[in-house]
Length: 335
Image (cartoon, rainbow, N blue to C red; front, side):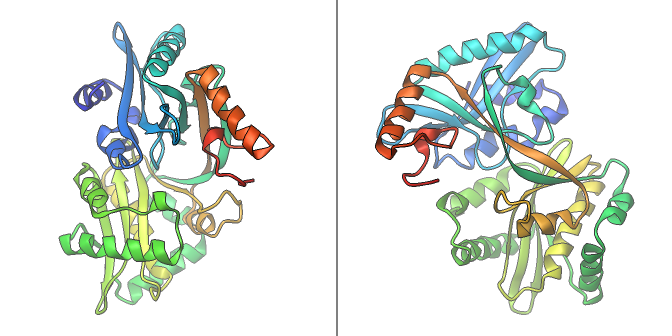
């Protein structure tokens, strides 16, 4: 399905399924990794949509389908008959294999719970916990449910006169540089480093906003939020290495207030920088209160013979089976 058809197919889905992570424009952010692609199966008024990035498998003529950085996975129209999903996956398997796609790797959407639309033979693993702050009862209950350290940090920032500003063009330019410097400082992997073209495409997605704080020295910190029809999402952040800790709390609180003002059901903050339950980033996000959700990943194989051959080749060279779902992509020597 081309992007216009993909967008039209999404338009007929419930609001939760039109979340920003399923948009063609969001998938296009990561097209350095592969080409944005959506399989759409329709029967009558019902449909299944399977979006992702068609990504080349190094050293082969094959591809796999991967969810870009964020959350995604399959979508199924409301009220679809029980047998439709099974028919759709069988059709997907044939079409994907004909297109050279060996398997699909999905980063499932923690709020949508779309694991229920996967085929029975899908392999599903819990990757880590994420944090979701519910705003359905309003902003005040969310504020009261936050830990005292978060509220104290926000109050301190406000007493010191720190101001949050939104969507200033000069802030976007400064944020790009700040983000790159932060990724260098943190020695982040390549998939988390983005060029100016990425930020240009990100700004063009409807519902993308940048919240920043400044001081006489320039940009102190910034957070990028993505607003969908139902939920908001914390997407990217960067801070100057001399920025006070309370700046990050203030920006997160500003995001919650912005989401509440837009009438959204809640703000998804994502997970930690690692899978550890004691991860520092996760602890910070949990200080805002909210609920812990499972972030799951899933594998659906399209061409079993070719998938098994790729995994067997990796196993033979390493002397042990891989632990990754896309085992043929696991780095050599990675435990």
